[in-house]
Amino acid sequence: MQASYETVLVLSTSLDEEASNALVTRFTDLINANGNVESVDAWGKRRLAYEINDEKEGNYYLINFVAETSFISELNRLYSITDGLLRTIVVRKEQ
Image (cartoon, rainbow, N blue to C red; front, side, top):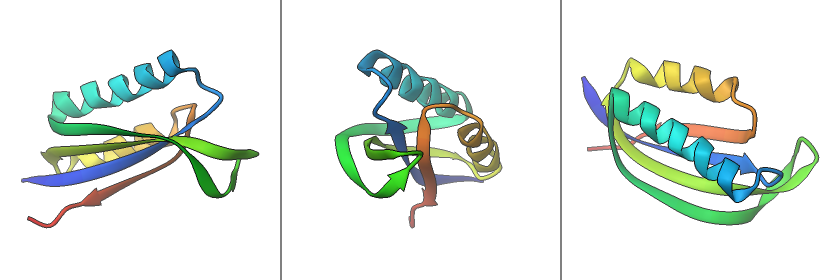
């Protein structure tokens, strides 16, 4: 069963713009292979509520997509083993 989701990625500011774009492209390609990306919004650099790995700021990206519910656990697993990601969250949207 497919459902609508949104995910927020908080990337390390130590990554340059090219590396950040490559990381976001990697995940959008992965999502497209298992569903459909509806939109990608770059929110830019924002101050974190608390320090994560001695970093006070992060680059935020919002991705809206449609995918099978079984894919979400694999996506979260890949998030957890990817360097350069400070925090992520995947939320199912109401339809």
